[in-house]
Image (cartoon, rainbow, N blue to C red; front, side, top):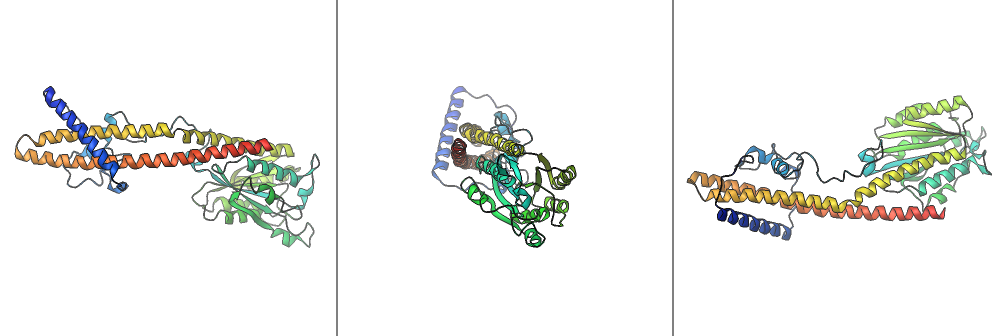
Length: 406
C-alpha cells in the first residue's frame, strides 16, 4: 500500500478484525522488544535514501528519514510531527540574548589571569591594596559561578623577583598557573589567592603565552581569558601580538582585558588594543567598586545561563512524554500498514501475494527498529536529564548557601 492514497472500503466486521489484529501485533512487538536487550541501530543502519533495506519492496517514501530517528518522514508528517527536526526539544527554555546553544549546554572554560606586580601593592581605598581588592572580586565571582556553566582556572604573573632592575629577569619569567582550568572553585579559591603577593614587573605578553599552554587539550571547547592588570607591559614583550596569536591558535580563545585603576589614557588604549587583538573586550575599572561591578555582571550572566539550564533540565517529564507519544503514534501507524499488507498477502494473484508478503516483512523490520530506538531514546533521556537536574539543583543550593555566608 502506498503511503499516500485512499484505502478501499471494507465491511465493518473485517475492519474491526483488522484493528484488533493490529493492536495485538503492536502489543506483542512492544513486549518482545522490551524483554530483549537490543543494541540501538547505528545511524548508518537506519532506513535512508542512501542505504535502503535490502531487498527494497517498499516505495521510496519509506526510506526518507530526515531527522534519522528511524521513523519514515511521511509517518511523522501524517501524525503532525516535523520530520526534519526534534519535536520534543524544550523550546520554551530560552537562552539569554547573545548566548549560543553551545554555551548554554556545554558551558565555558575561563582562565583568570591576575596581575601581581609591585604596583598592585598601591592603595585601592578603604584600607585595601589593589591586589587585595582584585582578590576579593575574583573570590566572589568564583563562589557564585556554577561549575556546570563555567570551568575556572587561575594564572598569576609578576609575583616573583622584585620591582628592581636586579629582579626584573626573574619577575618577567614569573608566570604561573596556580589552578588549572576546571579546578578553581569555592572550596579552594581563598587558599589559592593567599599564596602570592605583589612584588615584580608586568609580563602581560608572557601571561598570554602561558594561557595558550593552559588551554592545551581544550580545542573543542569555548575558551576565554580574563586578564586583570593595573598597568601595561613592562617586560619588553608584545602583548598585542601575543593576544592575536592566542586568539588564532586553534583553541577557540577570546581575551578580555580589565584595566584596574589605569590613570593614563595612553595606557588604557594600549590595553584596549590587546583585548581587540584577542577577539575580546576591554573594561575600564577605575575603582575597586567598578571592578566588583564587572565581576558581578559576569555572575549575573552566569545566573541567567543557570536559570536556562535549570529550565531545560526541569522539562524532562514533558520531553519524555513527547518522545513516547511520537514513537507510539509511529508504531501504531506502522502496525496498520503491516495489517494491510497481511490482508493483501492473503488475496489476489500469487505474484501479488508474494509481493505483499515481502512488503509485510520489510515493514516488520522498520517496526522493530522504531520500537528499539524508542526504548533507547527514552532510557537515555531519562537518565541524562535526571542526572543533569540533580547536578543543577545541588549547585544552586551550594551557591545560595555561600552567598548567605558572605
